[in-house]
Amino acid sequence: MFVTMFIALLDLSTGHLLFCNAGHNPPVMGTLDGSDERFLEVKANVPIGLFPGIDYEGEEIDTIRGQALFIYTDGLNEAENTQQEQFGDERLLEILRSTTFENSRQVIERMAQEVARHRAGAEPNDDLTMMCVSLITDTNSA
Picture (cartoon, helix red, strand yellow):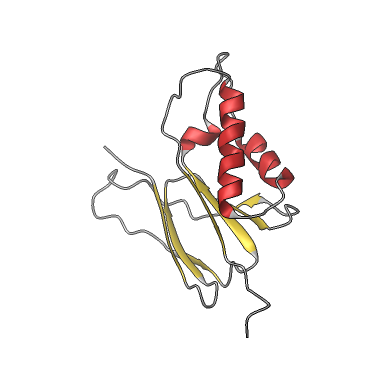
């Protein structure tokens, strides 16, 4: 038995992100205007539970302020339609790039609609969990 995990700690005052990826899909990081969505390059830590006593390497990003971080389970990119065609990584990026960012909820709802459209009635073959985090500075506050 094993589990993949992406765990992170975000400092809301600075945007500093500490994280560790344990065999999970790489998150997507991008600008709020959709011009630079890309898979985050993460260290190749193994899933939790495969090897006892293994050390995991953490990573950090100075700030994610003004960007969106999209984290998801493989039930998204591996979602299949009735012809067993997967949703895929490229479609995931294409949708994020074409979505004008209003807020994190809107991004999640758009992605859920696109996955449902892709499945076209096919039963889900895995769980689907998504999270979108953005840290935006309010320039109107003193």
